[in-house]
Length: 255
Image (cartoon, rainbow, N blue to C red):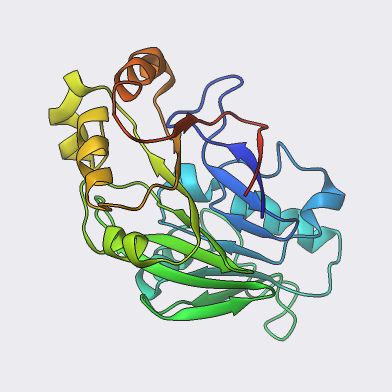
């Protein structure tokens, strides 16, 4: 499993891209940074995007990717995959012929650039060599995490989340779980704001990881607000009995 970090930050600043992970060459998890990172040739290889939720920092580049694929005359549609509610939000608020053209009907309804695909939470769906399961997490809008399994190994990608429950049960029971990609947006001193905005701090991250009990996969931390990154690093370094890595834009992780 090769994971290329196109963006992993909780705010957009120069040299800080928002969330997007490329799994292999053709599957994206979220779309906060695609077209400003990948070449057109690399963009043309993308088959599907698994969307955790419809907040702009996780979907922004879907629109520009669709535009690029359309005018490059790619023959197969880009699949945008998530729960029904998340898909409806993307359709209603982005591809609505106001904010952006409706590429589900361009060049034509019979030959679209974009195709929406609904994932039923809890059910596995096959994408090439991958089995993907969407699991609800707790955020301010409908949000999914994704458990991805292939060849006896698994990785769990959480979207933005505050304290949650079901996803940790799945993590604790997952066979061959090698890695968890989880956010920690703010330092402990900003717990009240984190709770209001549906995010984790170092304190709530530590509490969440305890829900896995005996499972000890590597933990890859992302979505930090750049201004507070140093403080968050120091705080999570004090979490015992966990292998926690802070990921960076451009990094390649092999599991």
